[in-house]
Amino acid sequence: MVYKTVQGTYRNGKVELSESPGGVQENTRVIVTFLGSGQVDLQQKGINPKQAAELRARLAAFAADWDSPEMEAYNDYDSAKARLQTR
Image (cartoon, rainbow, N blue to C red):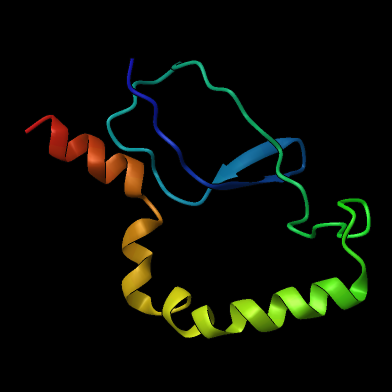
């Protein structure tokens, strides 16, 4: 079985996909996972504001590379890797 991941938004009781999944037959079963807000409760993880600031400062050196357009190639890394393995 091949898995396909497509982003979407839940509105008015329906999931609206951000793109067509392509190659998926009608009436194919799906599993929908609702993602959180993207916010992480650092205190719940045992990280206080001072520790968070120190961590942010240490990771700042990576921000320019991490946010560069070239890194978008890794957004779909698993699918790209699977395609290469099937060749």
